[in-house]
Image (cartoon, rainbow, N blue to C red; front, side, top):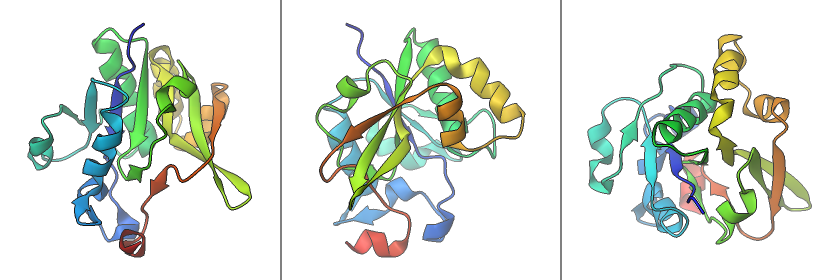
Length: 185
């Protein structure tokens, strides 16, 4: 069976954090991306980083850095970039993980399958969707490009439009970081 390649979505501007690269911000004395890579390397041997700007800032991780082809489109541009990167390597689908996410379940890619699917986790008594943690068939790239061309930017709106399945995971999973205070916990 073909392994699922994974792209880390690190193209955001981290405005709520005061700017910069969230994956390079420190949590418990390590950059977030290092926590994520510890988990991801258990899931896939083929990993890349989607980031804009100078790729050298990720050089110590020895991974390809692939910039967005479509600027100013938010996380969906990163998902499109991931699909096109995977397709160019002959893969039928691709996993994506937001670059500020730690705590991946051991069976993440197995349960997400060939997609389209995205993860959800329980927060208190409610389920919280994580559409930037998902698996997407690369054949959806043309439709996603059209969706972005229409001015749409909502990840969940696109996920619903392609019939993506929500896959629920219990436990302390998919922790992400949105404010400087989150990095202190």
